[in-house]
Image (cartoon, rainbow, N blue to C red; front, side, top):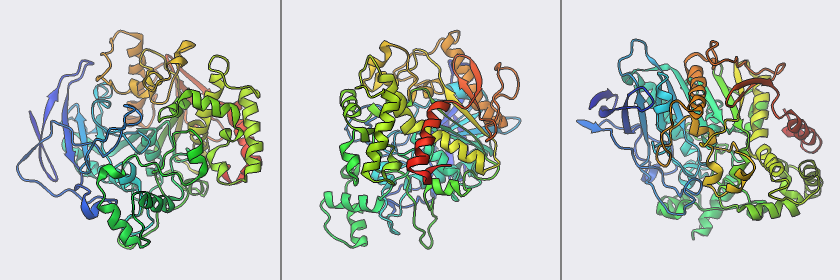
Length: 546
């Protein structure tokens, strides 16, 4: 039993043994804001009011309202609106020098997930003398609905994340942490969130470093367009026929949370016709309202192209896995149906932002060109050319967005940025199995979206402990040292102990690190594909080029 005083009151946590070497102190279910209930639904969170006495911090708080359609493949509702809780894991409450702090923002397509330790346990990271903070934030409609009004401005989930980062600044010293040395990191939607914090005026000054894993603001699913139209259509589908914005807000405010979660409301034909894991509710460009903070205003690409890439002085690592595109099959997209669409429809291959900018006749011409490049005009076949389809999906959903983001940042900012490609292969590469794509393993071990997380976190619920003498654990140890070195020093390879030097990425020298069983420095990853994509963007959609 251990007690710590924070600004809101006293917390009682516990000490935990660590099978991987370093014991730590655990404080779970810490409220960082008031419950976003009633009139606070859809709005920015309010600071937590203090409590009296000692608050037990040994169990996680409730997760956000959701249906876990990615990991659990479930349509069962779970969670509560009273979900704004975080967890702190620290190896030393009274260190000689304050410890670096790493704040993890979970992914899940902005519609599911949590920071709880059924997935995000601290054991791997904490043995490198850092403090780990994990957070919950509002998801799906409750976190990202936008009516473009004062009552429902949008980005409530992002403002929750800001509130959590402010709480860290105000309280982390009490856990032995250094508020001046905070690294935010996340994967997938969590990475896109991190990328957005690098631009948002609300987030400025709340962290020193950032890591984006498999997601940036330039990925096609990270920013929602037509948000007001989507909100009005959702209200209609739920039975609200009124046209007054105040009445629509009152209607949404009084709906049971179960009625709002996992409501897919496509407003473009391609969203309903094409099988892909579309994110209906994500980050939006907000209007400014008097007396309210605005998380982001404007299109992410235009903001970055105009030089608003990274807050001054913040250092960043950005990267992706070899086979990101496997995620495509995670949210109700059966491989057979996807293969059928890819085989028969040229428009399947048209990137989403180009769909928004060019007419259908040009889309058809471009789709044929891309299909020929990847499939050589053949039908898709699991045994013959599925890997080529996977390469396209990976570029379309993640890699093109990651590399375009990297190039823009190198061109428009003076910040130190690093680029990586993750290629570790072991029994922990499980995501394709989890979502029903086991046939991929018949030829090779894929390095899917999410697989990198199993080398940062134990995922002990469902996975056995890792033998510390195994080849797998050597990769885990290497990977976590890169991440924690960056959090400590702003340099993932500050010495020769990992056997390679990871150089920063610049416009002149496109350095990156291949993170596999061994660390392999290189330049310009996936350059042939990237050149092909830049060529057709130059022809069909030059306004979306760096």
